[in-house]
Image 1 (spheres, one colour):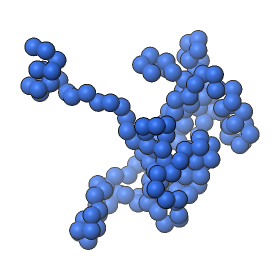
Image 2 (cartoon, helix red, strand yellow):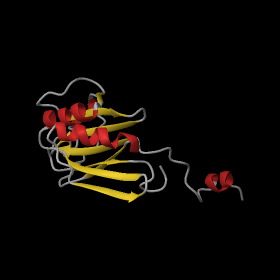
Image 3 (tube, helix red, strand yellow):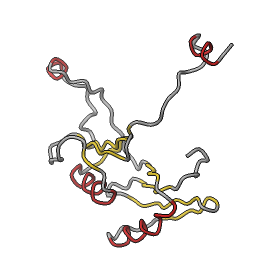
Image 4 (cartoon, helix red, strand yellow):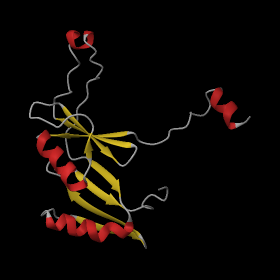
Length: 157
């Protein structure tokens, strides 16, 4: 049986192209939005963030999205009125210190270290996984662990 036949028979899953979006949950949405926009240069998808907003969407690279949700703002199902007017969001929420890793070039690590230092952001740890493969770890304003990882950390990218 070929892989295409196995997939058609339901024995193997269809391919997944990657992770499209990642979400972090934050206490102060404008503060978190400013952190990721200003430090990384991520562009907003949609409008700028206000204090009453539920989420911010930021473009990461050319194919990924970082979603920042205000704690609790998406924890309840949409009301019947919201569903009737096109509300499509399913409820979700999370607490605690999460982790996200952004891919950076090994050659840019020195520039990243200087950028972090200039902004008063402490590098919590730097790990040399093997020659030419390194990660820098910092915390965002909500305590989430943010990793800057060079290609090869997992041996797949």
